[in-house]
Length: 128
Image 1 (cartoon, rainbow, N blue to C red):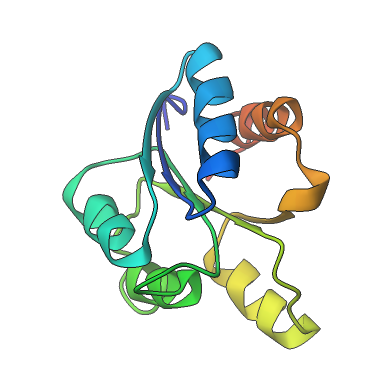
Image 2: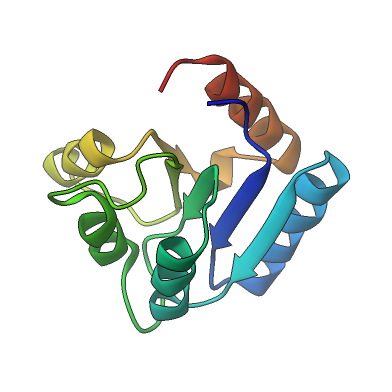
């Protein structure tokens, strides 16, 4: 992977989504912000993204359903990294199941835009 340049942010909280998108754009990333699950899934399937930031509680289709669709059997986005960003409390078993399909699991309350950019840089440096 040459690096992370394009990011799909599937986030229904417009304040949080815009805050992340603005910071990521200022850091030099191309960002598409999609506020619902169904449109987010279609965007992930129809355009190549280096990274998908995926919320769990979304209108129209939950992030867990999107993750299962993208990586449940055949990896439909093999060149994309997926980071789960949520404030939704998961039991350990559910969280571990999601982590096995995603490249990271982050709690939004703990992630500032600066910290997110640092995490993306670390992810970029790590082999897929």
